[in-house]
Image 1 (cartoon, rainbow, N blue to C red):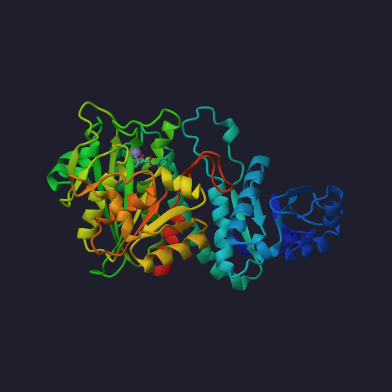
Image 2: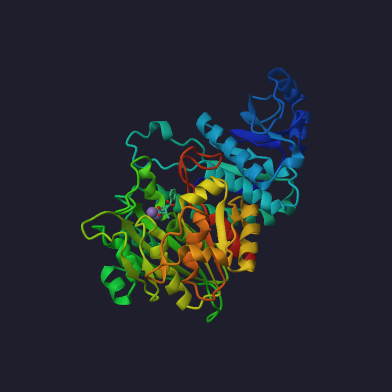
Length: 498
Ligand code: BES
Ligand code: MN
Ligand code: ZN
């Protein structure tokens, strides 16, 4: 992560490689742009006319060696209609500018983006969004590319400029939040992007142990410990794999002793071939991302530690591969879970809910205040919501409401699907307590119905991140690959929860 700091000062006085100024629709400069224009004898207006830069969102133009200013270049970035701006617009603009300057060879630059008016936000919100845009937008995962020249990074520091010195305290605090949230998000991206032959259940356990902190306790159970503890549903899915499973428990004690923790539960399927109900070959490689629920949990713990959040957290991750070895579990098998609930396996590819059965039951046993789980659980969720929102299903209106608000604020969005009692019919089994598929209809909801059998009466929300956890096109703030979905969302949620 490059260096980002905050400062107050006029654009004409900055001595770094570039200043980035917003330009509104209709070629309207904002405060610092007008200042610079005065200081430089109207060079900016002439430039705008000459190059026909209109200020529409995302467009940009760079002016070199502006007379009367000390900076090497002035980058104008189109912000469009100010009334339509959101915090996500700021993330996108900051990312665009940072990527362009990085490519163009600038090293130290100043961003005047927080002076844009964004409805219903504070200066801190805006500074945080700009910093997030820079850090998230510049992320790359190129450790396996042996020729790195093309990827060398020019950009060294970004200074986020605020209007006055009085703003600096809020801006500094916002920067701390952004740094924590981004380091958690980038950690989750890295874990997702690691290939399945590297990111194994054992590897996830080591990564959890790597999160060292005096308020954090991490326990990683190997196969023998899992057998002893009785996580039989996890073991059933693991039968087809040559690699050992792991059951990972994280306990962060940032709150009062004895205060019930918030439990975060993650699906850690390090590769999902579907098992005996094997998946088609096309895009099967993407199933290395089937551990992104676990990655989100680890990313949130990383952010929570850095923020020193004043609450207790319990993390539970069940991790295995879903393969087709000779001992693999089969369609028709009946699995008795840790909780004792029996599961008829109709499709070995609906394995996520099976391993989560044990993780959720264990979490519920610890009597947390609430449970939030993260899982790349259903293809149906990708059909319903595409890549723009995670599916949200759950029993607690309070938790769901908090997640919706946090998701909108952080632009790590969720959209609720209902869980009416009638849906439970679809997972009734003729010969066991429940079956692991509920048919094609409402697949995301019936998967959640399955999970609901393991959380007792603990307030619970389930996040299906199948469509959001990775992206094969790349977005304005994420390159192709893991996105770190869930980390911004739930870190924001926990910050609000206090
Ligand atoms: N990991 C997949 C879900 C998935 C599919 C996530 C595509 C992202 C993209 C999960 O284990 C799975 O295979 N689910 C099945 C369930 C079905 C057999 C009931 C699915 O969605 O097809
Ligand atoms: Mn599957
Ligand atoms: Zn899966």
